[in-house]
Length: 300
Image 1 (cartoon, rainbow, N blue to C red):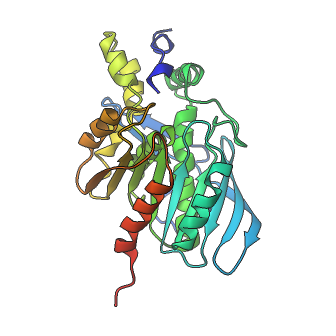
Image 2 (tube, one colour):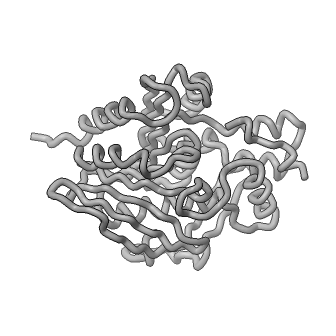
Image 3 (cartoon, rainbow, N blue to C red):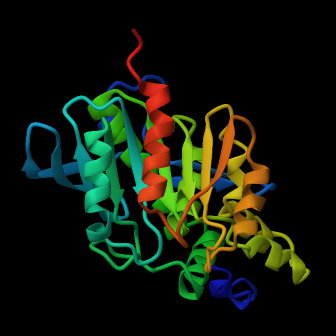
């Protein structure tokens, strides 16, 4: 949210490399950011421990811990036996697993594996700082020293989750996120060309880059701010599809902000209103599942 953007902050897997050829996985995740602020990531391999929580004839639910080079990341998976596609979902600020249990079952029952990622600093089981003044200050300091910012590592987490699901099910995997999570997911989909597409709900740019430029700053502050803005990457997702959903009555991220980031996307892209206020809800679920039913319906 724009209220969290503090200018003074800037002023003061292929898992275990299985099946990969021509690629040497780094021992630690690394990044580069070019002069245009475009982030390139090399994410270190992760290992994963999966604990089965429930199972029936329709789907299984499990808790999967990703052991990354920068700490453990907790995820939860609901999946049918043979999904036709999969989702890596990044929640909005403060969203907990409990609010998505029914959603995960709904997607699994429709034929899609749904992975909820407890993103760093979101107040759940994964350690880290939430997006805000302290995180920006920490990450910009790390950026200046060439160390791995948490923001970039969070993007690596989504990429590692995508690799895990692709390895597990051999199906297309989409990046999906709501509100703040949509911002992380857009960057992940733009950085990693192996995501099948991007679904963003109630999301927009952070607004940091424009604020920094508006203060007359240049160089590294602008480069760093640009590297974390979703609009830097959403245009790079094409020719993979982009779906954006926004409620006209959204009280947190204005509808116009959603339209603005949509304008940066390239075809194929879809912008749809949904009933509600802010964040993913059952209306969005139905719209997504309906859209994907046309893509993944059995062909006679």
